Amino acid sequence: MELCYQLPVLPLDRPVPKHVLSRRGAISFSSSSSLFGAPDPRQLSQRRGAISYDSSDQTALYIRMLDVRVRSQVGFEPERRGSHPYLGIDFRTLHSRAESAGSIPARRIRRLFSFQRHLLSSRLLRGAPHLNPLHILDEDYCGQAKCMLEKVGSWNFEIFLFDRLTNGNSLVFLTFHLLNQYGLIELFQLDMVKLRRFLVLVQEDYHNQNPYHNAVHAADVTQAMHCYLREPKLAQSLTSFDILLGLLAAATHDLDHPGVNQPFLIKTNHYLAALYRNTSVLENHHWRSAVGLLRETELFSHLPVEDSLSIERQLGSLILATDISRQNEYLSRFRTHLDENDLCLGHASHRHFVLQMALKCADICNPCRPWELSKQWSEKVTEEFFHQGDIEKKHKLEISPLCDSEANTIASVQIGFMTYVVEPLFAEWARFSDTRLSQTMLGHLGLNKASWSALEPEASGSSEEGESEPGRATEEPSSRALSQGSQES
Image (cartoon, rainbow, N blue to C red; front, side):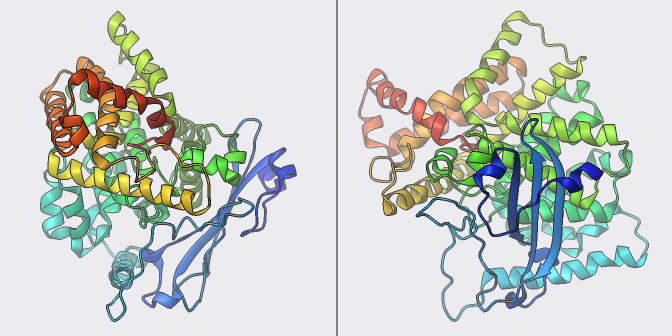
């Protein structure tokens, strides 16, 4: 690791020079960490750090992070995250809404609860005995949220309600519960304080101002991943190591998502686009950010170096598979395996591929949820798309596909996405795992598509052949616009 300290770490709040990008990559960032912050909103705790690595092999080599207290009249000092010559955007506030005067800000209320939660969990640091590792979650866990977690394997799991019951901490509680339920905490001898800190930092590194790509989406994907891991074929074949990777990848697959898609980053000359050479820009950043938090918290520091590096590599392989622009590549390979009936889950490489497909399904499973849940997610992702389109209009940039609110509707976006992205993937998944869950998902998908068609005048008033034309026109834009790797992430 001595070599790591010889790598240049750029000053924070400064664009990355091109001569540095040609040799090595560097990322500077900061994110609020309210769960470890003070109750005063003017004393918001921020984590700042940098990641540097050799761009030749795209391997993270050095992570530097430090805790600082930022005092500002507005709560925190925004950091310039874009590098467009005339477009400076703070992605942390891109989708934020102004809070009404005279009311107590929701963020302040959450911070007050979170500060109390931090005091409760700090009992472990003082050596207080605990019979159940879940006591670290705090008293909020023991109410309605705990009752909901007893049914965490249900496909009708109400993630929005669960997020409210956990005071906006659904990702921390749900992931912690699943790791404990699978016995992974004890099996891998994970330190409880390090694990909680890791999960809190993961949750805080999601931009909750984003309507869609936020911590609730990550919790939803993690819950869906749990449902897939319980399917008979996977439950009988996956190892504990596979399950650990699957849950961690689901929880971190959109980490630090800026709320805009890859084409936006490319055309605004964002340094992340240059850093990753316009290839799987967001997915690479999610992976590197996850590696940074694993190393910062030293969650796997007790494991042999080879094992921890293997976890980082395989975690990256799973997250990179969520790149929607590579959808056809993975789907064709999956279909070939099923046609030739040569998937052998006794082989580690085949199990890993199935995990990739499971994560891809979990990432875009919203159209396969019950209508009440699916509709909420559809509205949120379209809101995020349209907001990006408004920014592009404001700065006279080319409007990205699906982001023009004047040319698209929620229904048209969803019908095209279901037809050309979701249906082919879940049809093949049902071939692989022909279970009640698979049939339930396909059933919801058909009903939801019909519901959106009824809400779209053009779709409902045209024949099936006529309907396919506008859908076909959105197929390619869909792949580009959803390059985040989720419905659009």
